[in-house]
Amino acid sequence: MLISEVVVQILEKEGITDAFGIPGAGINPVYKYINTSKIDHYMMRHEEAAIHAADGYFRASGKMALCICTSGPAATNFVTGLYTADVDSIPLIAITGQNTSDLFGKDAFQCVDIVQIASPVCKKAWCLTDAEAVPSIMREAFRTARSGKPGPVLLDLPLDIQKSDIAFDIDAYEPAEITTPGPDPEQISQAIALLDTAKNPVLIMGGGVLLSEAEQEFVEFAEYMNIPVVTTYMAKGGIPDDHRLNVQLVGIQCGASNIGNKVFLDSDVVLGVGCRFTDRHTGNVAVYQGDRRFIHINIEPSEIGKIIPAEIGIVSDAKKAMTAMLAEAKRTGGKRAGSERVAGLAAQKRALDVTTIPGTTGEIKPQTVFDRMNEVFDDRTLWTTGCGLNQIWSGQYQKINRTRTYLPSGGAGTLGYDIPAAIGASVATGKGKVVCVMGDFGFTFLVEELAVAAKHQLPVSVLVLNNAYLSLIRQNQVYAFGYEHAVEMSENKDFIDYIKVSEGFGCTAERVLEDKDIDAAMQRAQDAAGPYVVEFFVEDNTDCNMGASIDAITNFNE
Image (cartoon, rainbow, N blue to C red; front, top):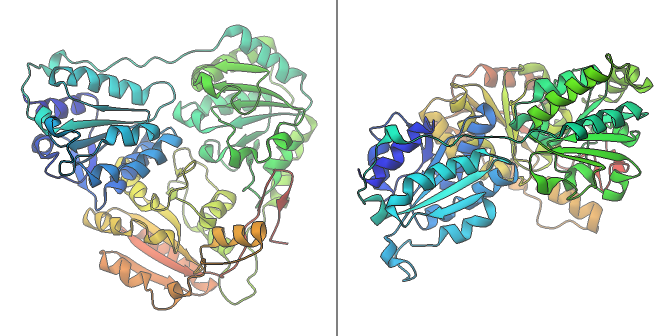
C-alpha cells in the first residue's frame, strides 16, 4: 500500500474526522486519499489559519483535528499556529508535504527544514524518511499529542516517501493506549490536612482542569470544602460565573472586578490545579507568593516548583487528583463550613461588578459593548478572542457559565487566531454559534478566512470594537514610557471600510455608532445562520484596568 494511503487510513483509525488545510504539489499524494476518505476537508485561505482552526476545534470539543499543507512557505506559515497551540497545551496533528529526500540540503524548490524550524514550538516533530517506520511514528505522534501535558505534533512527509509502497494492514494497527498518572495517597492526605488547618484557603482552577475534563470533580470538591475558587484565564467558564464560590480571575489584567485578586491576597493556603503560575496570572511573583503556602497539582513534573515553590507538589492527572481529594475530604470529615469570608462572597461580587460605564465623547464605551454581549448572547454561545484590549476586556467583563465555550489565545495572544479558531469550533460543534471578539487592527489579520465561513455557511459572528488605535500598545507606551507613537490609525474610522471588506468575503455586515443600536445589531448577529460582522465605533482612548502586580491594579473606570 502506498504511504499516502497508509497515512490517511491511520488518520481515520485514530479518530480524525475533520481536516483544515490547503493542498499543494508537495502533499497531493496524500490529498488523493483524503478525497476518497470519510474525513471532511475544509480548505482555508492561509496555512496559519488551518492550524488555528484545528486548535479551536479541539478547544470546543476535546477532539483532535488534522491540519495539512504543502512544503516550503506553506509549512513555515504553520509556525505561529503551532506556537499558539503549544503554549496553551492544545493537541493537534500537523502534516506538511516536503520535496524528495534526495534534495535535502541542496536549496531545492520549497525544500525547507520545517522540523528544525518547528521543533521549539510543538511537542514533537518528525521528518519521515523511512517508509517502513511511518505507521509506528504516526502511532507515536498521536500518543505524544494526547499524553501528559498535551500539545501539537508535526509530521513532515517527503514526496518520495509518500509514493513508497509498504506492506500494511489497517486492521492490525491499533492506536496507542493513553495512560495518566494518579496522585500519591500520602500527598493527598497532606493536602487535605493543610487545607483543613488554613484560615482562608483558596482554590485555583487552571486550564489543565478543562483538558482533563475534571470540571465536575473540581467543583464538587470546592463545594464540599466550601472554599472560594479563582480561575486562570485558560479556565474561564470551567466553573459557572454565577456559582456562589466563583470569585473569577486572578491576574494583572483582571481589574474590572478585583474580587479575585482580593480573595487571593487575603488567602493563606493555595491549592492550584492544572495551572502554571505564568506572568499574566501572577504579576510580581514576590507579591503573589507572599507568605502563602502552596499545594500544586500538575500532570507535568517540570511545572511543579518552576515558578512558585510548592510545599506539596503532586504529579497527577487533574481528574484523578480531584477524585482522590474529594474522597479523602469525605473520609476525614463531613462537609466543611468554610471560612467566615465565604458567606460574603456573593455580596462582594455584586458590589464590584460594575460593567456599564457612561461615555463622555458621544461614542460607545467599549465596556458597554461587553455589558450588552452578556445580555444578548446565551450560554450556548462559544467565544474566541486573540489579543489586545478587546481580549482583556473580554476576560474582565464577559460572564461565561459553560465549560469549553470560552476559547481564547492565552499564552501567545495571537492576532488572527480569532476567526479561523471560530471556524474550527463551529465545525466541531455541528455548526454551533461562535462569536469572535476583535479589535479593528486584529480584524485585518487572517480576515480572508471569513470566505471559508461564508462558503460553508458557518454561524460565525465577528464583533469588531473599532477604536482606530493599537490601544493596548498605546496604553503601554503612555503609562510605562511616557510617549505615544505609531499607534493611531484614524483611517480605520475614515476611508477603511470593514463593512465592505466583510461583504466582499460573502458576509452580512453592519456598523453601530450609538448605544441605542447595540442590542438589535447583536441580536441579528445571534440569529444569523451564516457569518455576520458587526463593527462598533467605540471611544478611541479608553484605558483598561491593569497593573504590574495583583495588589496594584490601576482602575481607570473611576
